[in-house]
Image (cartoon, rainbow, N blue to C red; front, side):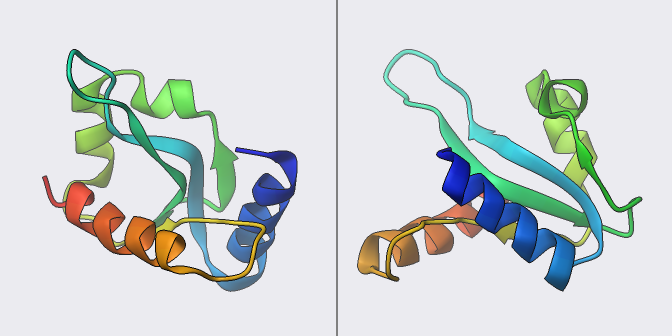
Length: 100
């Protein structure tokens, strides 16, 4: 994620949410015939407000799944460009991917 998008993600997290922020949260892993998909940010509500080390929290599929199971989360998709249909699609389908 470009630095200006990282700054936007962190500003939103800091000002608008309360919880653990994990940047570049993997929702689809890289494997044959499947490109990886990551959320720009995932906030896990009810956890200590800090920026978590992505590798520490989600180095395996099971760890990532257990981290969010039965928790309230906020999905963040950030673009440093004006709102457009691409961003809308990313935001919409990100929530669908999180359900799997």
